[in-house]
Image (tube, one colour):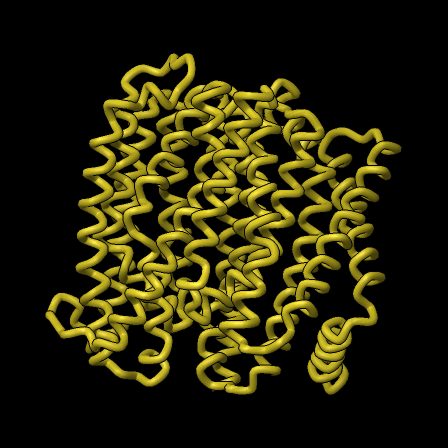
Length: 514
């Protein structure tokens, strides 16, 4: 079981990370052509409506994550009857949610103009309707993916999704170049979304022939109560997640303008691409951690896993943030021109938010794996309120523009999330008195990353490089400096010695014995 879990964890990490890299490249290509054919305003409306739809999707209440957790045990035990009952319940719930999101979207549609300052886009209601349809159809199929994820075979979903993504990108590029039509662009998106979900559904049915998700099977009371409790907790968590990810574009569109949202969207594409890769890498082991918690009862071994997860997360974050802080503006200039760049202080705030959110993925992964959603519900509601209030106040009252929005996100992350999430994991998940020990490691990781980024920026001031070769030199310099900082700051830690020993053992086992 342990070996199988490790192999599946590595397989999920490698494949999901690989498919995400390809996804990022394809999105980058699409956005490049999008900017040159439709312009910044359409790019802004694309980002705005995506965020509005994600707010409406609050209707799913986080039930998907709660049900994924409830599947870990019956999947490990091979209890088909329980799996059937959970999936029937999930299917019914998602169908209801799909209709709810559609209804909420139709209610919001007459008020779209109030979300856009100085709107110059025609037929925004029809555009919004296409965005809405693309999301709603997913709710009638996407529940099937949960079964593969809980069974540590999420990589199969990733492979299917990236194949259909390649097809979508090719078709959208053709439409943009030949017709410059945003409507055809969105129609292709809807068709591919439907096709992807149908294909994965058929894959699940073929792989699990003994399951019958359309036949009513009563859900055991204890599992129903657990799902209900975790869903209630996820209501607040979902609310906070939306406030952080979706409110930024909405606030900017309402008080600053669509063109600003469009320029900001280019940076969001790059930063979110890095964030998505990191989240996929550190989060793809969630199912394995959930199974580990079921199999291994030694809380100190679970805590060691928690610290090692942070160590790897820290390594990936320090490398990524150093590259972002040095490359974002030079890359934007080379990519689409200096008319699309943002001030250095805005970029610094984006990177700081990226660092905090990235390191939070360790406690978030464990909260998900241990099913501790109920414990973070109120926290997330407070997070949402702080984020929106501070952002709007800084934008409207102090006229700080994008800076105000980013500071609002940063404030809510630091004063609400940073210290509470590890407390939930150590107290309610691991049940060990190691909160302060973890917080020390947490803060130490943040300081290491900040010192690394600051050093990279200082070195950058003495480098005047341009073009593709210049970007490559900057990339190498950023990786080298951040890696040196990471080693110097962590060389005495137990986690560093553990992974160094693991690497040495693997090297000897694979190469020296040949």
